[in-house]
Structure formats: C-alpha cells, structure tokens
Length: 252
Image 1: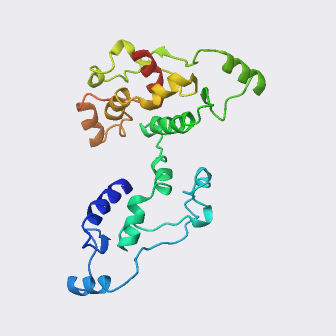
Image 2: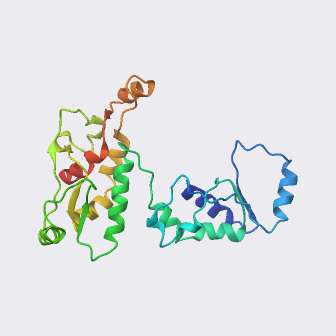
Image 3: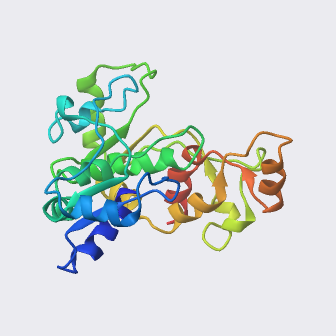
C-alpha cells in the first residue's frame, strides 16, 4: 500500500507545475464543490494529514526503535493533502520506509509466516560476521548450556533441518508440479539452524516461494462457499511454514 502511494506521488512530482498532492478515497463525500476545495488547498502553505498517538492497539515494535522512537509513533488514514516539499520527502525517504518495508502482518497458517522468516534471515545476513542462523521456538527446552550449543553449531559445516516425506495429510497440490515435484515435498517445523549459504538461498529464492504463495494456503472453514471454490481449484489445506524450507532444500 505505501509503496503504491510513493509511486503515485513520484509520478506526480515529475510535473513541476503540481504543487499540491492529494490521496483521496472514492468513498469520501465532499462538503464543498471542487473549485472551493482546490482554491483552499492551493492557497494554503500547509499539508493536511490526520495523525494521533495510538498505544491501545500495540502495533509498535521495539525493533523499530533505532529509527522510529516510540514517542513518535502515529496513526491515521492514508487520505492526505500534502505540499510539494512533503511529497518529495515521502518519495525520497530511505530511512523510515525500509523499516515498514521489512515488517509484515503475520497470520497463522498463511504464507506470511515464511515471508516473516525470510525477512528475519535477510536482516541477519546483512551482518557478514553472522555465519549460523537459528530459528528457535520460545518453548524449546535446551538440553545443554548456550556455550556448548554455540560451539557445536559454529564448528559444524552443516545445516540442521528436520525433514520427512509427508503423504498422509494430502497437502501437496499438483498446481506446484512444474516447480516442486511431488517426490520432493517435505514437512517438519520451522525451527532450524542453517549455514550462511543456505540462509542466502532461502532469502534469495523467488521460485519455490512464489509457488507456496500461490498454491500452499490454509483452507477456508469447512462447508463454506469459499471452501468449495478453494478445493475446486485443486488446492489443498496447506500450512506453508511446515513445508517451505524443508521442500526448498530438497528441491535444490
């Protein structure tokens, strides 16, 4: 959404005669005619952006704190009217936008789970001193202390990814067959330890991930019209994070 807004504004500011930039909902009901609104906006040196502090919904993440202090977190709609200098600021921003770009809304059982994992790994591999990458459940109970586990992983040239052939649950869809042969379909949890080359492969993969995004989806509630349409498309009830990394590493 914000990427599309930035592209719209980017095109608009290429025309230097444009001095006011408005994002307007098609459901907005104007209280005044266009001429009045135009003259009001063009004669003002201000931008009009609804904004208020929002703490109840707890959407702010402390991962943003190095760029966006919690006291600066705001909420409002995307329907705005801004002057040229503010439009240029939005388009050219390379600091705040990447923070939002690297966050995604995660819904259990959907491909956003693996999208979030890839974003985590993408950030981690930016630091070239990182050589092992671990996704660990907060309910995992370690059998050894941290020092032992660290030394074991860092001294091993291998990744550790549990994986097994899964046919009983019938989650594989033939729609994937051009990218993922059925015999390469695997399952296990998303809790892994991978070496740098495998982490980079997961982050840079655009083929297997695309197949999961299109064809590995959680089924709608059984008996609903959405479920009937879902299964007519030769889709299966599929939980992406239980299959993606295992299948990707088997396919390559």
